[in-house]
Image (tube, rainbow, N blue to C red; front, side, top):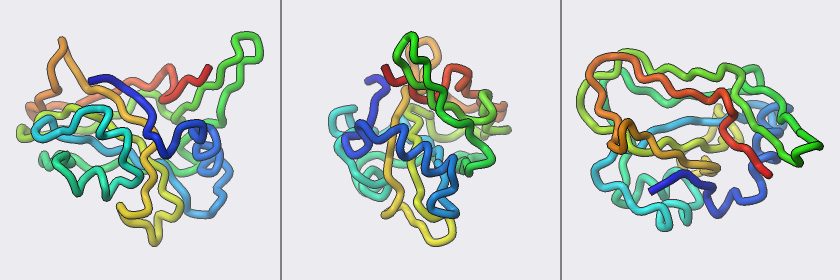
Length: 163
């Protein structure tokens, strides 16, 4: 397993990021959620899902650890894409590089992080959340096992570097 882009979002990562950054439509956001290790489908199956609802309707499940909650990023929480015309690369970044899930209790092992686009946080549901990217959550080659401590995820290099 590795990190990747969902088929529905390939080539659209910058567009979806910019929609949130420009608040167009109003109330759009990026949503970060974590999938449990148990029952997780392989990457080829995962990347084919077109909504968060479809991801969770199969064998994969969102973690249920006490203290866990999805993170929502609005235009105020993300940075504009950075374009490097020398390296011909674009970096998509969250406004705060270090994302902390505070005091996560034991329970589900954390295996995969998903970042999705929500076109309307006031009316959106998992059926309208478009998954953009997914990332392995590994420590020494194994899923993260919460113990009641904080879980910190470092996005200092952005969440997507497109070249």
